[in-house]
Image (tube, rainbow, N blue to C red; front, side, top):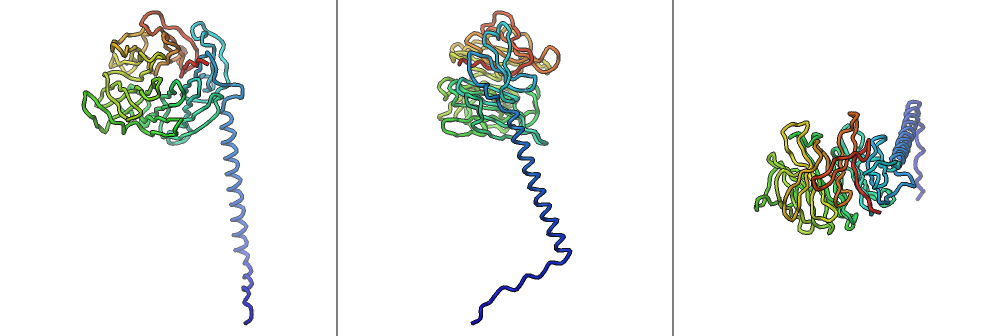
Length: 341
């Protein structure tokens, strides 16, 4: 039997040859554009990373520097007396840290609002990045560095309005388990299981055991302080009119903002709640504080207020016992956190 050979290919006509050339050019061009875009993204990422010499160490006050939007730090003693800041940290819209690691929330450019939740190590190098829909608003890290939490605005951009929706996530860095939204937690209000479509959570703060936590839940036009349990994934409401709780280093008190006025321009006052007696103490700060305050130590709180020049914000400190006078710690800063070492 004679062998069969494929027939010679039919020569391409002039139009076919032109089409092949055009397709090849477009393919190469597309590859070049993709390479350029990838290279530009890598360059942009490098510009938002921390400098090689910038890391977590202390005692120091870390914060977002308004000039450039990157993290800076200054000696913790300077938070009370003023001092020179050291720049060179990562670019973040919200930032929080413990001595073991940090969380950086960075708004992602685009038509639809997105946020990068970036987990950082002690050298402030990226360990994990999660993209979530929404605008960054709150960030927290537990004292051990194991637990991190973030809140984004899904709709709206202010806690002073009723038209906002939030999404709060919790990530266990030891197990890698991510709770994308707290809305499925078993919630108890007034001793009964509670379900409602308008439930929103925000402002998580962790206890030293990495199991107990506190947060705000909003429903039916009211806010509640809830105490949560990670192991059995439950939460119970403790009292009303508590927002953005922050647990003291000794785990005995919560700082929070309390609504004291219906004036949308100045609705809140900073308070501290004793968890043993459940007694509230108003602090000496008279301005409306729309922030999740941070404890510099067991006696002092730090928080952001609108800047005196009408642009950006400044970081202030105030005693946690209701005495004293508020003082400016950082001009042009936000997201304060004390790092012990």
